[in-house]
Length: 230
Image 1 (cartoon, rainbow, N blue to C red):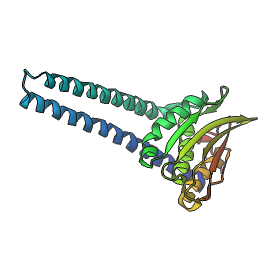
Image 2 (cartoon, rainbow, N blue to C red):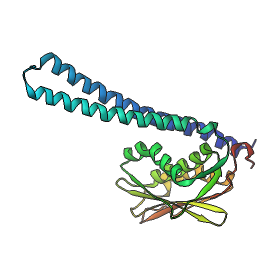
Image 3 (cartoon, rainbow, N blue to C red):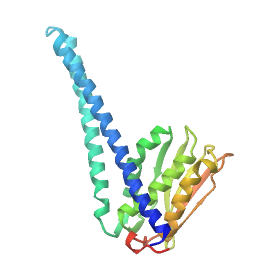
Image 4 (cartoon, one colour):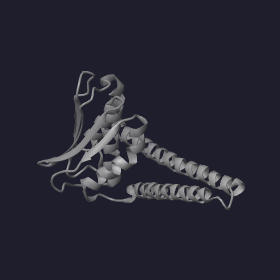
């Protein structure tokens, strides 16, 4: 096993840890909000006047806010469950659009922390790739991570996918000024190694002087982890 392959395998473990930590933070935020709202209901029960109609309205408002958080928690748990089973799936044909949607859900908190907005532009037609879902998510996560490292605060990242012969191209562009190559050098090295071992390549025009773009090109038949060479 080459050093390049070992590096990708190590990065898959790091990727899993980052996603797990990210979603667990989100769940903790939900639980903290529910705990705070529960404290408000206890205050109303202890100090409220049963004859006070305003107290009833406040209680109704609190329970509605709790319901919102419960639904949010369910969505996060469902996302975490789906992601956790990605490694069990073998190579199979899959539509790109739902994978991109899952990716933005997994990275939403990371973008918010950096005050960066992400928007997916769905492809004009159905685009399919044959891959292990975990491997594809890993590669696309590292593409987004590169973009987040390059993006300045307040930026908007436009994510799209196109099909070119036997290739699928994932492009991220921004009209905002980037941070420059230095801030994203390590992230570029990581996705470059992943792209080459998966049979693709990565190109970027990241710079501090104006709009920039990143393009990840992958084969329609993505090289699975068990068949990596190089």
